[in-house]
Image (cartoon, rainbow, N blue to C red):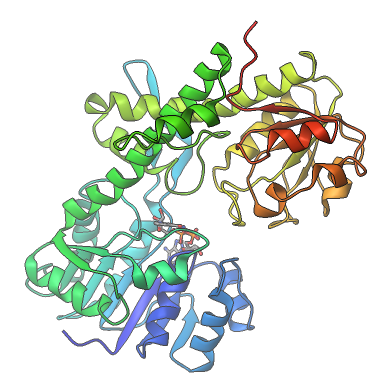
Length: 437
Ligand SMILES: NC(=O)c1ccc[n+]([C@@H]2O[C@H](COP(=O)([O-])OP(=O)(O)OC[C@H]3O[C@@H](n4cnc5c(N)ncnc54)[C@H](O)[C@@H]3O)[C@@H](O)[C@H]2O)c1
C-alpha cells in the first residue's frame, strides 16, 4: 500500500517523535493535538517535551514543510492514534477485597471519533496507545464504522504498540523491532508498508489482540520483576544483608537476572499497564495485582527507612529530596514514586526541599522546589537520593560536605558508593541494607 499523507493524533512523547520521523522520511504529516498550548508552542518554533534529539528532529520536519501541526485532523491516507491511556484518579474497582485501577480510555475514544468525518475507503488506522486487550476490535472498530465504512473490507485497522525507552526514543523508534497486529492480514500488511518507511528493526506481523497482549505482557513482567526485587530489599534489610551485593552474586547464576530495587515503580507505562490486565480479568490476575500493590507500597517502605535514619522522628526535620522524576535522566514526573515519597514525608511532618534538575519549574504541593542542589541541601537534616540522575551519582561527598550541615544521607537507588561517603564523614543509609541486631 502507498502512503503520501498521514495524520498523527496526539503529539506527546510518542506522537511527536513518530510524526517528525515520518516527516523526516519524506511523508506529508499532519500532527494533531487538542491541547492548544502544544500546537502554539510547536507553531512558534518551540517544543513542549524534553527528549534528547527531538528538538532538532521537530525543527527539521517543520522547516522542510513535511510536518504541519493543528488541532483537528484532515483527510489523509493513514491515521495513527498516540493519545494517553492513563488510569482514572478517582475511580477504582474492587475484586476480592483488593482494589485495582481502571483505564481511562476517553482520549482514545475522542481521538477515534475525530477521525470518523475524514475516513475514506482504502485508509489505514493504527492505534499505538497502550490499551486493554480487545480495544482495537471492541472500542476503536465500532467507532470508526460509524462512518458507514466496514473495517477490513473498506479500511484497514491495526494495533502497533510503541516500545521505546524514554531518553532513547529517537534511536529506538527506528531501530527496535515493531509489532503490528491487524484485525485481518491485509491490515497488518498495510501497517507494515507504513512503518517500513523508517523502521530498520524487524517488523513482526500478528493479530490486533495479540499485539495488545504483547505490549501489556512486556510491561507487566517488568513490573513483577521489580516487585520481587523490592520485596527482596525488605527482606535483606530485615536480615542484615546488603541487597546490592546479594543481587550481584545471585545474578552470576546463568539463569538468574534479578532487577534492582528502588523507591517504587512509576512512569506512564509500567506502573499503569498491568492494571489494564487486572481490570480486564480480575479473577485471573492475582499475581499481577499483588505485584502492583507491592510496588505502590515501596514509597512507604522508603519513608520508614528515612524515619529510622532520623531516630524515628520526622517532625520539623528538613529533608533534601534529590530527584523527582520517575526514572533517571528524564524530565517525566508521571506516577513518580519519588513524588509519593516526598508527599508521605510532608504528611509525616517533615519539611521537604526538592531539587529536580530536569524540571526545575515543578510544583508539588507542600514541597519547596529549589533551582539548585546547593539551595536544597544547605539547611538539610538529611539528604535522600530518590532518582539516580547521573549528576547525582557523580556527586563527590567530600565537596558535598562543604555545602550542607547534615552528615546523614539515604540512598534509595543503590547509586552512592558507601566507602567514599563514610570517608567524607557521612552516615549513609542504603535501601535494602540492614543492620542485624
Ligand atoms: N511515553 C512513553 O515512553 C510511552 C512508551 C510506550 C507507549 N506509550 C503509550 O503511548 C501513548 C501516548 O503516550 P505519551 O507518553 O505520548 O502521552 P503524552 O501525554 O505525552 O501525549 C499525548 C498527547 O495527546 C494529546 N491528546 C489527548 N487527547 C487527544 C485527542 N482526542 N486528540 C488529539 N490529541 C489528544 C494530549 O494533549 C497530549 O499532548 C499512551 O498510551 C502510552 O501508554 C508511551
